[in-house]
Length: 77
Image (cartoon, rainbow, N blue to C red; front, top):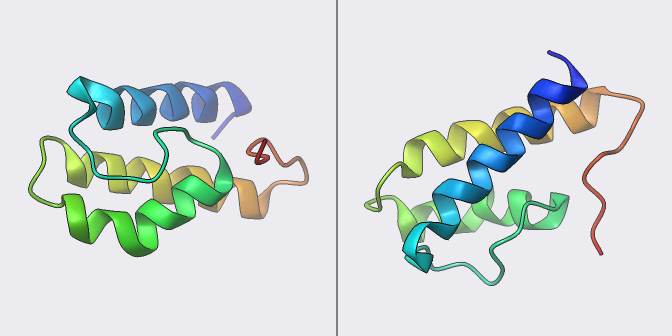
């Protein structure tokens, strides 16, 4: 997986969770803390929402890439 594919996945994740702002999350961003929260806590609260499984899969792939790469692309602001 390339860096640019991860950025595309990150944008796709954000599109899913911000659609009509229907996801119940503390923040609708894709920094590493938000992604980890969604994986560990947020998915359970939002599992019945549209494309929640896809958002979970994307979040896991992005976090996995971040952990395996030497470049951290998902800093919290």
